Image (tube, rainbow, N blue to C red; front, top):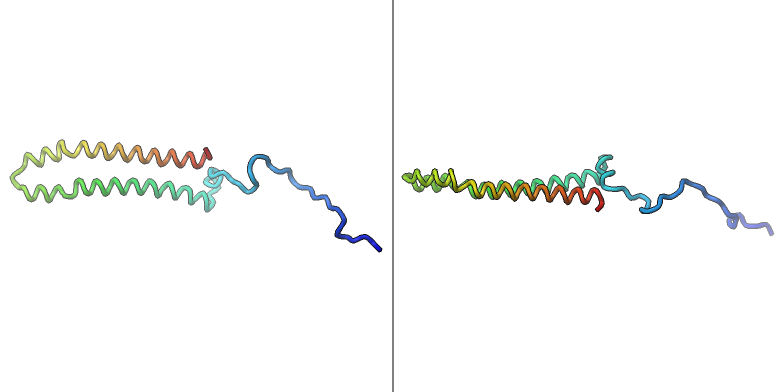
Length: 119
């Protein structure tokens, strides 16, 4: 009886495998550089977090400064109050708000870089 062809051994050659990482794994930086869908998603997530921080600051600023014309309209003879509030009262909250926003934006970018650098 002749030998079955399915038992014959076949040698397959190909390029050597990379050591370290599983095949098919790309670093996020490569995804961003090559402008793939995943890279686009990474960048969009950073933009969304930055936009969320900006809208939060805008909302707080609107709640802080928005009612001032109504307060000034209710007290028409309080010119000194207007100057005190506009001249001195708003600067401390504005500086604190700006400082919070800058720290938040830097933290978002630091987190993004940590994600992209795979640390």
